[in-house]
Image (cartoon, rainbow, N blue to C red; front, side, top):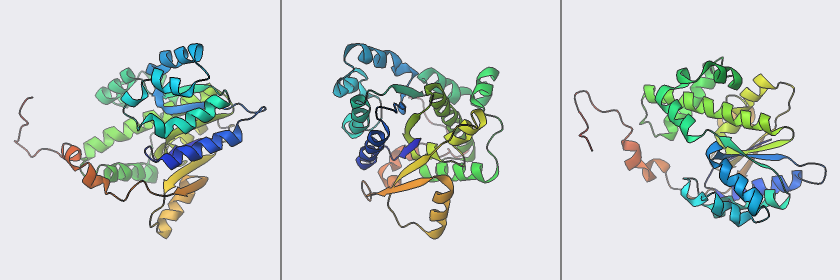
Length: 263
């Protein structure tokens, strides 16, 4: 089961925790795969399991969560508290820093052939699925990412989706994935790579989304992309393009002949 979220919405994590609690019982011990943890975190996770496995806040401390770039520990705490209370295995699901650096430097072409085969990256996204992802990236970067940058980001997203799928396959059955909502889309994300590698496995995708003024076309797209959609209140009504304009301006392509001075 895929539990897609908006990372900074505390309601989403409380609802994810409720789903975990409802599914985990004496006869079901799903593994919890987490996008916010990578292979770099495994030694810290193993140390927590050995030393303080019943203390959920010790997990946040030992992971040094509030220095990892994700929203604060207190927002995510309900998810991990539910898993710890039910003694579920927690599995890092994301790329390591080394793998992410290689991907940024060389793209999919730089991945070893065996890894590309294992992750089932071929064939590439095509047609409507690729354009849908490209448009989401453009919108997410407020129109300031050029076509070359969008292509790089599409490759990165595909590898991350395939890596998250790999974590679920390593976890066995049943398994839950906590990840950004874009990774849970059935038409272009983690479910695609699960279907390529394990077509016999069933997948349920739940999207936790902030309520907005959804048009009929947007509702139709959501119905295609997810099995279930759970609407929640918005964190705020601020325009992210205004909030992050300074950072996004750095993505704007430089005019020909203009050079950025060295720092």
